[in-house]
Image 1 (cartoon, helix red, strand yellow):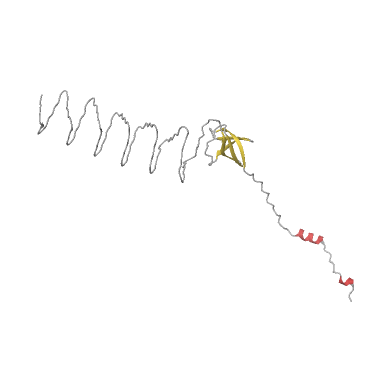
Image 2: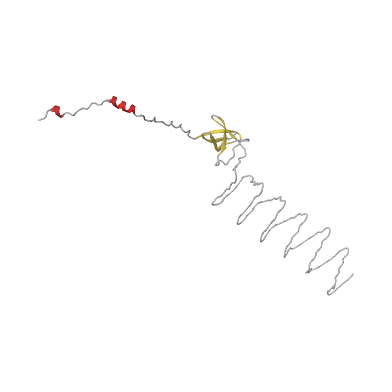
Length: 243
């Protein structure tokens, strides 16, 4: 039978100094530690006041006046003195919205470059007082059907050209004043209950065939009246009186 001393585990003593000498003898390269990244500044929202717009947008924030740009989504053009909401991202400052401005001031919607307003349904444009449409070059209206309703209309146009297949107009009264008027048509038909025409100077009618008919009286009066025919001049009636 073995004794209790024989069952005890064998203990081996470790020499830590020998391990340190071994590591010191090995020439290991130094490990370079990358510098810790600087903390990135999180974009923030600030309110400010517009101080200038002439040479660029200048907004005064909590740290002082800074140069700013109007965000593409901000269609309202800010004016000096307006209170605006800005997004600050590092050195960049964007004006997101115009919060308030001077009472009674005109609100201007301005977009850089071309702008198109489109709706899948109906698009309405209304104003309590007046609507103005102005363009430096051209204004175009394209529609399957155009309706214009107004109590009064006035147009001042230097030159006008109309091209269409048919024209129908109904007026209770129409007055046309022109220095010169010219009408060209393959066929011209005029119907009226009464027609009056006053010519101060000369009136000429040149036609291949000229037919003048009256159900009642046909009178031709003049200081001097000349009826001339190259081939035949005929007076026909139940009674013919001369003089």
